[in-house]
Image (cartoon, rainbow, N blue to C red; front, side, top):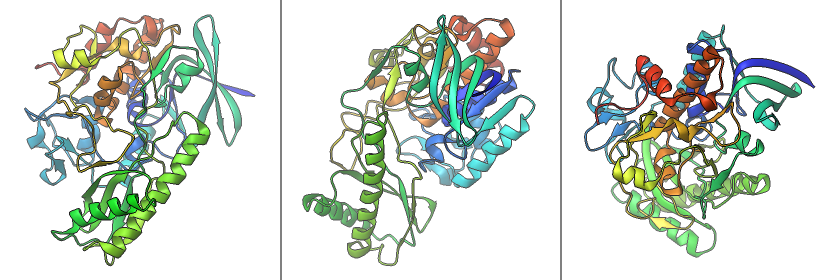
Amino acid sequence: MKTLQTDVLVCGGGCAGIAAALASARNGAQTLLIERAGFSGGIITTVGLPYFDGLIDKPSGRFVVKGIALELLQKLGVAKEGAQRIDDLRPDLITKYWGSVWIPNIEEFKILTDDLILQHGGKLRVLYHSVACDVEVKEGRVAAVVIANKDGLTRIEARQVIDCTGDGDIAHWAGCPTTSSKPLMPLTMHFRIGNVVPVKETREAAKQALIAAHKEGRLPNFYGPGLIFAFAKDECYVHATRVPANATDAADFTRAEMQGRKDAWTMFNDWKAKVPGFENSYYIMSGPFIGVRDTRRIVGLNVLTLEDLQQTTRHADAIATGCWFLDIHPPEVTLDKPFTGSGFQPKPYDISYRTLVPQTVSNLLVAGRCHSASSEASASSRVTATAMALGEAAGTAAALAMAAKTEIGTLDGVKVREALSKQNGGPFSDI
């Protein structure tokens, strides 16, 4: 088995991972990014969810996430230079009900992340179509991560490792304590339908068609449905499938992918046959992966809790700000609104550096939806723009640790916060 060496290894190129890799490289560390897909972007590109959720404090309209997340929006022409609030975004791309913004073209986002990686070629390498499959731990450190790709198995020896797998795979395999929600939130296969001409009856008729299919036993589960015309006036982007599953179990994950595709196809065919506006429609695509909301989370040195969100707890080592509502999807049918409960909307809240630091392993950070948070709190902190902020913090911390010849688990989070503030990142200060 061959071995590669690097300063920083980032496992997973989703929202957290691409931000972590760029931040690490920009701060001077030799960085290797691995990603199972053939492109970066995670849920935005592999699932097709185009939203930067968690960017905007809905009541005030102010951005609570800047840094790399805002840079991406500016490069895509979604945000103005120097943007600070919702008024600085393209108005046709704002979802005011959610307090979110979407990007108009997922393929352009893939190309943008590729270009940014290539611009940092002296410090940043990427291996797509590569997945972590094992971890070697020695004396409380991750000594190597084993990856699998077309080269076979390769050992990656890194001084610092950042787990952006979404599922906390590296931390779990390294023996760090983790936890999971009970029940897990369900998975969703996103899909797109072209040549839809909506009329006033469309949305209610679409809902009634799903209710009928469910009663007939042809559609096990669904929610909403959300019919969103985000990409074009005649293209329906659909939030509606709901598949209870454990995405850390290979067999169950496979079953969920197959069920999600079948359910999406059932919805399309029923709508085409029964719903005004869908008469001449055609199925564009799904996926390519089903969307995963909820699997493992680490039990870190600090745990973000619902009480922290309710009380707006402050932390000296805050490295990001969250603001999304408690977006909890139950594993059963819900009509109209997708989430369960009140959908509590917190004020902007601090996320501590210590929520990225797992127990027992000294050179590992975890960023993204698998950071250390309770079930309720993670329903807010799991979203795209917040994940980018957590990833940027982790990448910055890894580079700082390299420069200081120490390890990220022992790094002072206050110093990470200070470094982030110098690069227009970190927590939102005016709260």
